[in-house]
Structure formats: structure tokens, C-alpha cells
Length: 241
Image 1 (cartoon, rainbow, N blue to C red):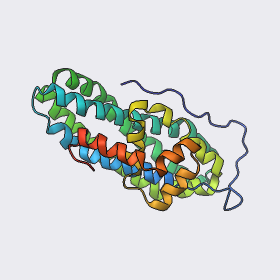
Image 2 (image 1 turned 90 degrees about the vertical axis):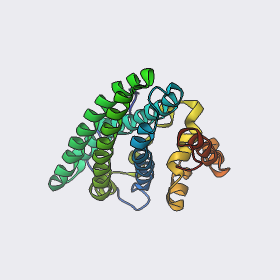
Image 3 (image 1 turned 30 degrees about the vertical axis):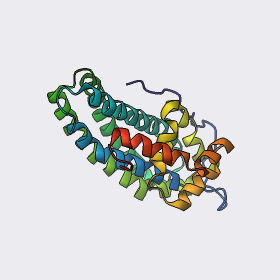
Image 4 (image 1 turned 120 degrees about the vertical axis):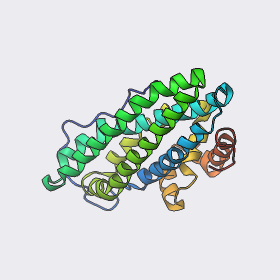
């Protein structure tokens, strides 16, 4: 799997401080929106893989490309947290909350170990369509789902409140910069639609307000949701997964 390497650079000289006003504090609902998309797609992934017939290379390619895309998005999301978010939180979180950040890092390591096993196996399966690779891949994806859901649940319950206390709005938004560039252009609209499909309307409006004008126009016209429905018909064989 080709993994993006560009991530935000954590400040090295910024003094520890909390946001001072309500407007200055981060709105972390965008993280929940992203997590919701990840949860749905990975929940569906094991059965999506397992349902491919032995030797059906055409269907294997469709599902394998979807899995590769999803793993790339996940890796980019976690790399930005590893390289940017955790250092800031280690610097600023109260000492009694440091174990929460340590737990997040440990959970990332578990997820990454599973991804490192899944990625080469997924590439092999795309080339052969072999049932043995398919079944092993489906089992590993179920384990990845369990590990990732545990991590995202803990992150939302325990870590986001810390981020809201000790980071500023601009610092939080820096975490998401560059994410769109990791997505291939031909599926970028569909991926935006995937993340927005189950999103809370208020959270969506907040996220959209920080995007460049062209992206805001596309979203308000409904093009990402349309693109995701079209994508889902090909991958999930239904309009909405």
C-alpha cells in the first residue's frame, strides 16, 4: 500500500496553554464525523471480502481497491495524530491525564500491526482471488474492526474532551490539513460523501464552514452524497451502504 508521508509539523516552541475563549476552542465534532464513516465501512468490509467468489478477479479488484483506499485513509488519519496531535497533548495535558494519551498511542500500535498484516495479504488477494487469502483477510478485518472501534470509542469519550480544553481552534483544524490530498481525485467526492453520509447536520455545517469555497459549493449542491451513492452501487451493490 502506498502510504502518505506528509503530515502537519507539531509546533516546537509554542507555550503550553489552553484556549482562552469559547470561539478559540476546537470543535471536535469533525473527528466524530470521520470516525462514523470509518466505523461503517470497516463494519461492512469483512463480509464484503468474504462474499467474493473464489477466483472472481473482477469483483476481487473492485473490493480490493476499496479496501486499499480505506486503509490509506486510515493510515493518513492516524499518522497525523501520531505526528501532530499526540506531541501537543503530551506537552499540554495535565499530568493526571497523560495516561489517556499513552493509551491512544498504544491502541494505534495495535491497529498499525494489524494493518501491516492486512496490506500485503490484500495485495496478494487482488492478484489471485484465492479463497484462502480471502478468508484469512476477512478474519483479520474483523479483528481490525474490534480494535479500531475500541480505540475510536475511547478517543471520543476520553481524549476529545482533553483536546477541547488544551488546544486552540486553529491548532485543531491544522490536524485535518492535507487529508484531502491523500484521496485520489477520481474518488475524492465519493469519499467526502462517505464521511458525510451519516453525519449530524450541525456537525456537517460546522465542517463545511472551514472548507475552501469550491468545496463548500460542491457539498451544498449534494455532489459528494450523489458520488458516494454511485460508488456504493459498484462496491456494496446497493445505493447506500
